[in-house]
Amino acid sequence: MIKYFFDVPVYRLSEQEYYLEEKNHSKKLYEYIYTRIDGTKRNPLVSYEKFYEESSIFRDMWRYNEIIGYIRLYILGTQIRGEYFQHKSKRIVKTRKKSFIYITHKLVSEINIMNQTNDEIYNSILQYLERCEKELEKKYIDIVSFKSIGQYVNWNKLIDDNK
Image 1 (tube, rainbow, N blue to C red):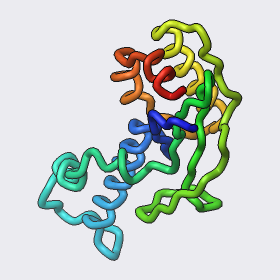
Image 2: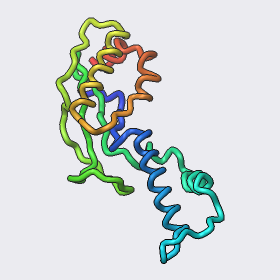
Image 3: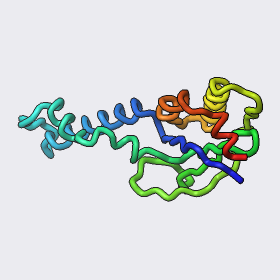
């Protein structure tokens, strides 16, 4: 029986890249709004900084709007593997509509965790996720949540409960 234990999000781009894109978009929008038809600049009622701050009210939107897939980690015997689900579009672009499809049962080769300590298992999973990131080039795998709890998990008990 397969025991799923963590879903790791995969993004189109990193959070920093996303907000840089958003800032460039806001600047273009600001210039468009405050430029007359003849190309001369209007006297703006608000500074660009204020405009950008107000247009970026939803600062955490990256986390939900730029996600393109998930690596679903699971235990199979003494191995840890990761299934991969991705947005079902052929070309991944900025979008608000997403539908995920199953891509593969094993993104990269599994890791064997037999007779390892909890710390060794945790570090093995981190190495596994690094290999996944290499496999999914030009994508960003968000392991922040996994890192924040992974070091406190009793991995051996989790594996034993799976048997």
